[in-house]
Length: 190
Image (cartoon, rainbow, N blue to C red):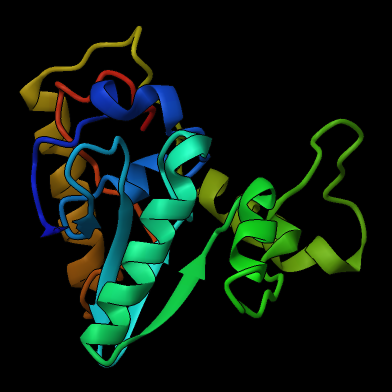
């Protein structure tokens, strides 16, 4: 089944949604591939003749092979190629046995924070951006599950985002990013 259902929620898939970008997979902008009577899904978007899947297979390990095989067949029937981004290490062998080519990218964003430093010329541009933001009075706060989560705060976040996009004069890049969400998204940190 190719679905774009809203019945897949963080609460329903929490037992097997172990991906750091799990909320990106649950984005309402994505389609979700499911099989009847099997738990889990593969989140993807169609871009031309490609199905771009996010985070691999979001399902219990014992059904991942079935879900992946059906997904690959469905893509082939639609004359589409499959590209998977942010695949978890544990699923790499499963994809390799299906003939996938694995390329690692974005590793500089997977950092161990213990002992991390902004020192050195490699991080100079980042330090300058942080300094300018502080001088401009920018303050960063995380809106976690323990904080206030009402419509007014989420409307303010949306207004800030729209103002920023308008100033840039460009549309939102919604590919592989999350959404602001709503006050009911209590499992998400914003």
